[in-house]
Every structure is written in structure tokens, then in C-alpha cells.
Image (cartoon, rainbow, N blue to C red; front, side):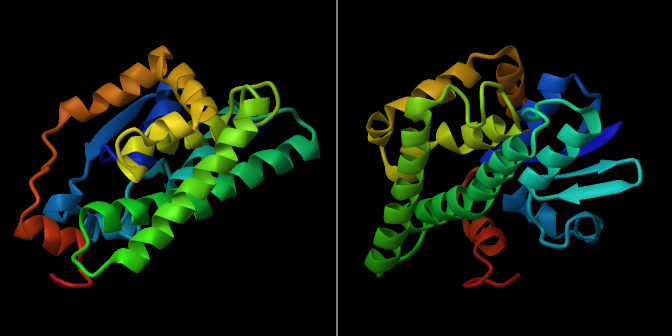
Length: 226
């Protein structure tokens, strides 16, 4: 059985969606980042980067959400595009775009918009601009395509959905209206039974949400080291 180390953020949500779509047996192991549980020696041995998600599948340990998606897709032979090298190239391009562009810039936009102390105008403007630019690339692509790669639902769609559904969180209330094709796409996936089950996982554990000294100590270690 797959051990799935989880919190309710966008990156673990991608993996939850795959597990539910594929009907794989897994054991959900909540790791609460506000409480610093990602820094325990046991979890550091699984992911030396101390981030969620991670999985342990027998003798295989995989961290980074898009790496996990690709691993599970190859393991099961599911949610991959056609067998042509061109299709595989497209899949890898979009997966890396999400991993190196959309996720990091959106995460930093949220940090500077909602949590960083002043002065922050330059950093905030920079990350909001880049997050909006990345969302615009996705929106333009989805204006002409039902799915991210070809005519099939793949792991690239799962990776895109997890961040695409958070436009208002990243950019501010009402921003999603600027990306209608991305929102159409996100709503289509959101209605899938597997997505409904994946979203419900957060109800199984009481993750801490309060913004207090413990929150700052464990999430903003550059200013409040543990």
C-alpha cells in the first residue's frame, strides 16, 4: 500500500487526485506544516527538502508533486498521452512549466500578498505579475484545447488543476474572471467524482490554520529560525 504524506495545499492535492482517479490503495499520513511536522527526522529521511507531498511505495520513495505524478502514471500506465515521442514531449513540457513556473511564482505571490511584512511593493508586484503571466499562458492554451495535452485527460491536467482552481487566492478576489478558459477547465475537473473525494481528504485531519508565532516559526524560518 502506498504511504501518502499529505497536507491540504495545491501540490498534495494533485497526488490525491491521481490516487483517487486510479483507485489505488493508499494510507493517508497527515503532516501539519504549521506545527513543524515536516521537520521531524522521520519525514526528513523521506523528503530532505521538508515539503509536502511525498509517497513511499514499497522500496521507492518519491518527493515533489510532479515527480510523484509521473512515477504513478508510469507505474500504472494510466493518465499518460499517446505513445508518440511528440506527445510525451508535450506532457513533460507542461509538467515542468507547472513545477518550475506556475507553482513557485503563485506560492511566492501568496506569501508576499498575504503574509510578508512591509515594505514589500517591489517583491509583491514582481510575483503577482509573474503569477498572472503564467495563468495567462494556461488560459490561452486552454482556449484552443480541451485538455493540456492532446485529446486525453492526463497527469498534466491534474497538475494544472491544483493551481488553476486557486486563482483568486493567488491574485485576489475576482481575478479568476480574467481567465475564463482556465476556470472552465478547472470546473470540469472539480466535478469529477475523484476530485470531490480528493478535496474531501482535508476533513480527515484538523490542520492548524491560526497565524501565530508557531505558524511564523515553522513557515517563515528565514526570519524566525526554529
